[in-house]
Length: 282
Length: 87
Image (cartoon, rainbow over all chains, first blue to last red; front, side, top):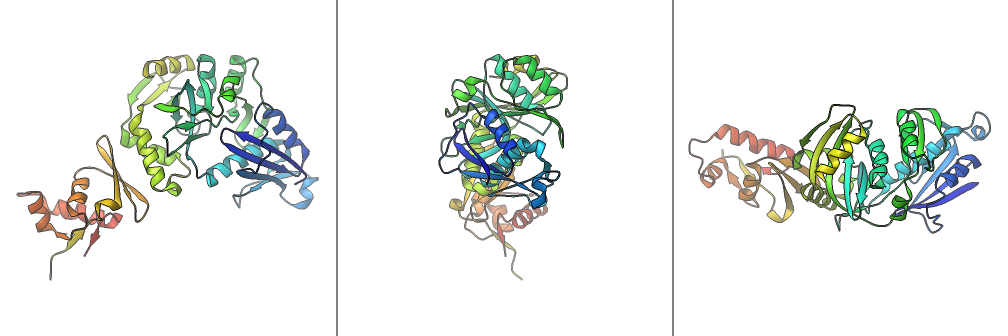
């Protein structure tokens, strides 16, 4: 492709090619503090025009790569960074075999990690991002990588995709943070990517042992309940994109995870409350 | 007509993991995960690589005045799920 960019996030390397320079320029700026890996990439994403003339006329981006969604709607080139991020997620979701992938966020202190999972919109990205201001390093947003052989969580500290109101909240909490461009009117509203704090990036290759599995829900009065291992297991199989593909390795990894951690569902009205509840569970 | 017989896979062909009150069963032949409650794990162990009838199972578990219809229904469900064979 005409323009390209290589980057390593935790143990995974990506190559992103683009027909336009702008998405690559934005990626270089967003990922400026990540290793710019130029070896053979684990995954390739291509941002290509939806029709040849769409490179110039109302440019619109199709996400291509090792894996594609055939009927995905193209995005305007102004959202090219979002397309690249979606493409990276797609390659991971479809192609990752080394780790059990959980749709979740994770934070850690030293070598002990908390995995937070839940439905989209439950607030786990925002909570994970804001916990960075309270002594936690961000290990992952979107995808948590569980290594079947060791039971450890490996960091995958991609920029956190924050939406709408969460953008201003995080901007106030981290005035010196490094951000991607604000993208308005995406299919999910306004989106802006927050690069994890330096401690999260510096520990980008340090795995941690999961000790707490949390099912947080934002916007409700503070409440906490234990979650049975069976329920946690079912919810995590649903939150994994490659559980079935990994077969027995996935089964052993997931049953080992839910049996080895404290499990709790928490409802919280604000991050302060959530942080207090987490400290008590921790 | 002979009685219906049931057989579970050999113990080495399933992996069991206790999850509090439930048990996760990984069936190696199909790659399918089942989440089951007692007494299914006990039934799987009793029937592992052995053809047994309802009478055999009642004797094995000493089910006196047991819920024979309930047991038959459970075995049928396990057969439909692919956890055991029925012949």
